[in-house]
Length: 377
Ligand SMILES: [Zn+2]
Ligand SMILES: [Zn+2]
Image (cartoon, rainbow, N blue to C red; front, side):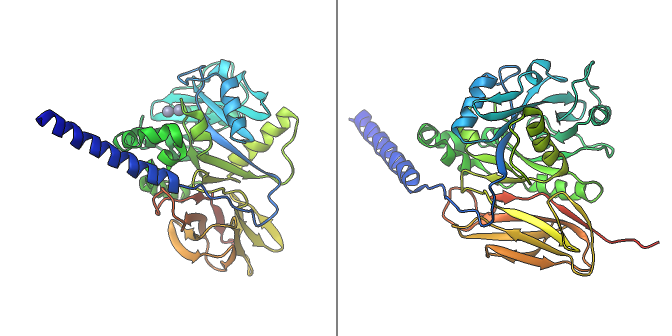
């Protein structure tokens, strides 16, 4: 009798849980938007991916197929190694996707992603500052991986780092394991929903990023750090590059287009699982010239910052100067005059729609524009 009662209570709880989950899944929608400006030369990709050449679960070919299924234009494979020569050799056009490769080095300070370098004849140093120098000499650039999760980064003297990860999807899934388990059945039906549920605002990373930018330009990355669940991650987190001309069909040229944009900071990050982000733009205008994200601009009498948002969702854009919001807008386009206000300006866009993502998580994260005062001598 007692057993039967326990069983019926258990079954009741399971049905309540399943109904609750079904309600969330049925009401979940990923928003479709329309780019406001002509964004035909914009490409989207996923950054920080592991294949079977290190600790990933799929081969580069299988990963490229997942990327193609998710309409990605490019992917950046970053297998462990110093560098990982096999992984580097796997670059090329696969399944219509531009497959690029760098490596993830294990350094004395933590994990460092290195990209765009000529293949070295001997391994990179395991001292971070030396590796940064070696990569620079070979024409490449470096990104500090997951600084506050997994293998944490130990901050040291200033070195020429090109970027820092603002979020690492893999870390977020691991850190939110109890919550992920709660939504486990949903992972089979709609992994995007689970992904959005586990995202938490990367406050520490954002603060550190802003403070690093005060002494040197360093660009922010939303990283998938994919080892498995490739398809779910590729549909969830994108790097967007607004190119000035179409992505070349010729591999070496296309590789240069993507890596140059990442190196210079002309890209933005987006949580694509919440809503399509294509068409976002942030630029400075000075003396009739346009300066994209990542640019250094000397302030003149009519310098202004401009932004354009994707259309079709309620949103709020925040313009930040040295990490502090100075302007907010819910419009599709806006401008902000900056005369006499030098600083590091970047944009965060928040969705004002019903979404499983927390409302303090930046749906779109731009890279900065550095406005400087001209020093007359
Ligand atoms: Zn790592
Ligand atoms: Zn990794």
